[in-house]
Length: 568
Image 1 (tube, rainbow, N blue to C red):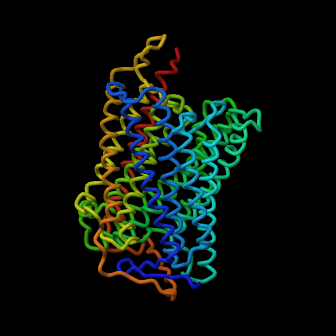
Image 2 (image 1 turned 90 degrees about the vertical axis):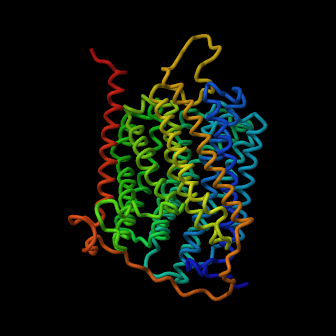
Image 3 (image 1 turned 90 degrees about the horizontal axis):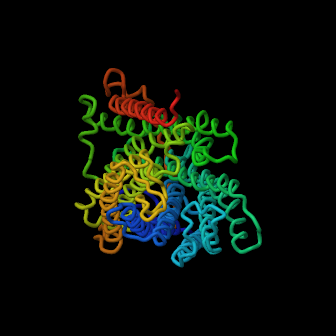
């Protein structure tokens, strides 16, 4: 049977029918799990608010385990598999490699997530996302994660196979588009991540059923964080690719320098997974030299890559806006950007939030000396909310507002409310990150369900500001969850009730012509735009602001460190 294709009349994108169906399935599953994970997160935040404390201790750790697994692994990886298929089959106008095996991968991921969810609901696997040994979970907790990982790994190989098919059948000219190159970066990191998970979770599963007598806790932590933290680096590569895609979709923006952007993605492949070392800096099982190297020289190269993307994405938007005549002063291009378009506003809030909150806190937390101040405090989940929730989740939401109507050939449901969704979710999540990091700086523990330690044998009280911050975190969580619910209502409503588009395309067996490779403009060719020789002066000022905030915050934390290690 010949593959079937359709060309979207609005975007010009070409969809292979099998690829389109798999993209829909993975994206819908992702949204469902996002709703579940967000609801669980609300219960966690309200429990950490001492005046509310909605859950008891046993239920809290059960819900916290589910929240971590669903939001940090399941939801984002489902969406990322959909994104990989989109970047390979759709952007390259190619048929998808082995779509039947793609459905097998999807089934394994759904079954694996369900099996792990059942183990958590049964109450015998409240080990949290890290599932550190020797604290045991039920065998099917590990089995479900293994099945999910196998399905995701198959999805990555299907993506790679599609790239091979597209090259062999010459469905595009030149090198792959930058967005596809970023997706390739995410796939490579994902393969490393899943390999780490297999290396440690398979023996742990065998330990849970009695075939292995002992799992060394220090070795478990070392290998597990190769999966646990690196899975978040898949997110970084994926959501940066989404930033570039949305800049092109909304503004027709081209990268300021494709070579520089590709080089930054390559730095991710080489160095970004090393950032997992900051979870191990208090462990005696790894040497001082390893800790210093991984949290300084090597990590800075991954940070450099993020700084490049943080400069080139808004820079490309600024250049595109200035070429359209918005060339007055430093920030006319930004003031007159389409802030009412949730695709743009969600992406830009994601970029700013990831850079100014998640990025700065991650680099500071990754410094070996400062890490001792916040290790295993609630500062760490605050950082996660600045990266995974504010950076990745909001970027994926923004892309969904454009992609779901294109996929399902329906108009966006409740478009006026959609305008406000990125602000509701973004501001709520940003406030959560701020308040948790502030409370963590004051010492609030990362995992203890009752920060007041009610009924404990020894009295302990945090500074009053810590209790206030945790209360404000609970209020912020309510705002963020309302934004998440609104997203779910809009996306599900678009699929079920959105007005069908009048201009639709039908499937045919004829493959469209190869996609011409557009050459990115060089910075030096912008000539008449910009200020004082800078093609993107506003972006440069924002980048300098980020640098100043980072330096000031870095030294503030060293000031805190000096108060802990007094020298007389």
